[in-house]
Amino acid sequence: TKGVPPLPHLPHLPNLGILGHNHSGHSGGDDEHHDFVDDEEEYYADHRDRKDAKHTLTEEAMATKISLAPISHKYSREINGRNFSFAGFEGADLEAYTHWLDMFNMREDEAYVEHSLIPKMPDPATFLKEGTVGTALGAKVKDRRVVVTAWEICFDGRGGQLADRLPLVEIQDISLSGDTVTLQTFPDGLNSGRVYEITAGDAADWEKKISDALKFRIYHRDDYWRNLRIWWRKTYDGDLFQAFLSLLIVASFGVICIVVQLQPEEGSQLASLTAYLDVMFTCMFICDLALNFYAHYFWAFFRNPWNNFDCIVVFISFVWIMNRVTTDNPNIDVLKHVRAFRIFRVAGKFKQLRKLVDGIGESMVPMIYGCVMSLIFLCIFCVLGTEFFKFSDPVNFGTFARTFYTLFLALAFGIWQADLPFLYEETQTVNYLVLFYVMFFVIFMLWI
Image 1 (cartoon, rainbow, N blue to C red):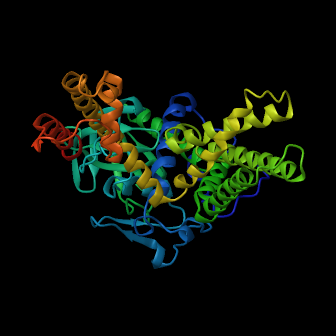
Image 2: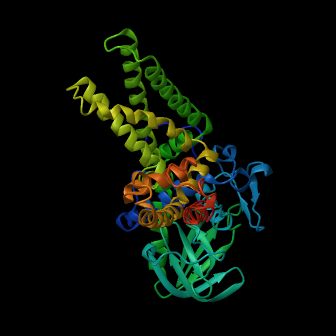
């Protein structure tokens, strides 16, 4: 990426010369790091940008040009609700901070609710190096299980619980002396300049694995195209951009309403104008979908049901447009009615509307079970009504279907359309069979 100017508001950190970092590539570990890094990147795409401002570093801090000089105290410390202090100095890796904060600042709208309060060791599938070695964590020296992943070094405490973690980009210096690997962290970083020591018989292999992982991590962090995608994701998810998209959706739906109201004749000037507007809006929605896919590539895009809904609506609109400009098949022209569902996309652009729709969607399964139970009771009353009144009122209760329609009218509109009086006018006596039948029908179908 030489010669490519850095984008504005992109965190760009300098190379660590002591590690021999080179942007054109990295030595060792390409294949073994690649898959896990992609998975971690999707995790950040889903969760990092949804934190409240008070729990994450500010945009101004993220946009700061990098040097080793500390920034103002306003951005140097962000303290979360569990009294963990983190430094936001110039040169720190912001993803490492937000990754750590994620474990203690879980939000109700996050998908990863299975995380326990006490952090656990990472998934064994992500291990690059693992073993029980002598470690020195501050003043504590003991044998413990240590794991190196593509993002950090994790120290096992007890039974798989995480005792400490060292993000790779927090390492300022790596030195090897005999059987001991010494890791010096940045003084103003997440680990506050702590020194970690790993003593093992294969210390040289530990030093190589950690160095290779750190080189790749810095290469991945400073990759221009990755930062470009992150920049576009922040821009796309911003309030201004989402408001613009919502305005386009409302304008598109307004054009549809005008066409339905005025019913322009085929070939008229108004019909041609609305057709051009339909094509324009469809093209803009295709561009919106492509940008959304690029910004949230790959699984983060398809895990969002609103994105899947957008794909269906935009694809059907595109097929209808292509049919209009090519074969003009009347059987395919019926797809134009799907355009009316475009307005529903506005619900996915606003947080409160999205919560409301998501709540309705989550309640669909219990509602379906309730409808099934109501249908069962209705069928029971249809069978009983047909058997009781098929001779008294064959028009409304002669068959199961007629009884079903009669009871549906009574249930939906409160209309008792039947020749079955509750009171005999001749004798002024009560027809108890009809009375109790209707009474229990109302109790079971409306009250229970």
